[in-house]
Structures are given as structure tokens and as C-alpha cells.
Image (cartoon, rainbow, N blue to C red; front, side, top):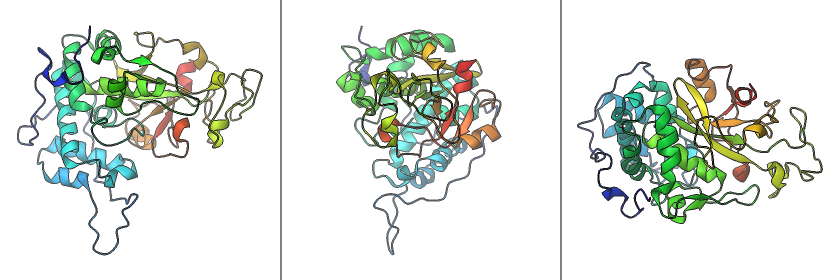
Length: 368
């Protein structure tokens, strides 16, 4: 059954309690088992903002900070600001009101369940709080997802333990946010279908990356830490570590990674989601298996190779909001060197030149 149509989502009977009003006077403090100190980032210019004489830079993060005195809300805003992609810091599509509501709803989700409150603060800030996973198009109406998702999905997980919230709640039922349910529709190699989360709801389909973004944000909306993981190319040719080769199955190899717009279906990219449950990261298949660490692609992961010399084509990678070097040096208990290695960026074959999304090499964890 349809959970709630897009147009009526905010009116679901018996749904989550109303999202907090857009004020900063009643923000509830949460317990912090790992206090995270962040420093407000210096301003970075963006396209169309030359900072010339008399030019007033748009800075929604600073505006939102001026509007709240709540210590934890300020810490959240400072974290978002410090690690936001440079273009976000002056984007006219990101407003102080948007940032404030995002913070309020993230904290509301954190406070709504016992397991949400137990998420370490460092993991909450990096993998629940952020308003984006990759380079999704910024700007309303099709990107402003959090209120819709919080209202619609929170009732699915109340009373469930965290594992059940992942398997029986979000990854089973979130696809019925619209009718017919959201389905997988493949995109041409090195390209992407719908990417903004609410666009996916409206058109009722996306490619693997869009589905991974959608379900990761659905997890975040109820307080479950989540990120996107995947590989730029399946290593069907058995290429040695750090090299790209061709073979009968993939005669064109990894061409899209060097600026071309095509490659072979057999060695094209694939993305899925990962969630932080019971103190460690697990993968989630948005296209089939509903259980943790299950999916059609599991056997394929065994052919992949860890990165070498910056070559990421055949590695298994995961996204991050903050610098992965910072996270691992500060919180190795949540981002242990034995399971993840900081890399220069999360490679996106549909946007290969964009190197602003921090990334992990998680290949070794899948090979074990």
C-alpha cells in the first residue's frame, strides 16, 4: 500500500509527530557521548561571487548561526559549514531557513528513538545531519527532502530496533512513498537518471545511484547514519591493481573515466547504500535484498582491487561529508583503518571532474 502520496505526505494520519517549528527557542539538548569540536570555516568564494569592492557575499551558514543560541544547533551548523562543498557556501539555493530546518529535523530524528540517541555524535554529524550525500542538484522544490521524509518515514521505525528499522522499515517500505512504487530504471553508462530526492519520488524511478541517494537520505531522515557506496567500474577484465585493461567482455574498458561518455555495460558503475548499525558499517541493497550485507552485487565485489597511486576505477568507495583524513585521525573507533582508507575524493563517473566529495576506499572490508 502507498505510504502517503507526495501531495498529501504532510497530512499522513498517525504519522510522526509534527516536525519542530522553525524557531530556535525550544531546541532540545541531546546527550553527547563523544563531544565534537568544530570550527567555523573560512569563507570560500563560488561561481559568480568574485568578492569585489562593495560586494556582499551570500553566506546562509553565518545567517543561520546568528539566528540560534542553542549550543548543539550551533555545533551542527558549524560542522555543516566547515565541510560543505565550496559551491554550497555561496549558493543562492541554500538559505538560512533551509539550514535551520535541516538541523532541527535531524536533531528531532536523533531524539525520537533510543537507538538514534545512542549514535555517536561524530557519526551523527557526518552521516545523519548533512543535507546531501553526493552532488545532488541543490534547490527547491525537488531537493528539499527532509521534512517530507521525516513525516512519512518516522512512523515506519518507531518501536523497531535499529536493524529492523533498516530492513523492515526503510529499505522495505520507503519505496511506497508514491504509487506505483519507486523502481530501478537503468541509465546510459557514465550518466545518471533522476538525482534530486523529491524528483525521484515524483517520477517514480531512478538508476542505481539515484536509488542509493534516495534510501540513504531516507535512513538519515529517521536518525540512521547512512552514506552511498559503490564502484566506478566492475573489474570484469581482471585488471591488476592500479591499472585498466580491456577484454572480450569489456572491449572499451573504462573510457568514461578519461572524459568519454560511454563504456561497456558489463563493467559499468554501480552504487548502493551503507548504514552504521551496532557500531559498524554494513551495506544495503536498494534494488533487491532487504537484509543487511545482502545483495546481487556481493560476488562482484570480490573482483575489485584497493586503490593504488590514485587509481580508483576498480575500488569500492564510500562517501563522506567531512574530510576522511580528519575523521580517521579524530575518530578511528568509528572509521577504523582496518576497514577504510581515506582517498582524495568519491569518484562519480557521471561527474568525473568533480572532486569535492570526500571519500573512503572500503575495498578491504568487502574482500574479507
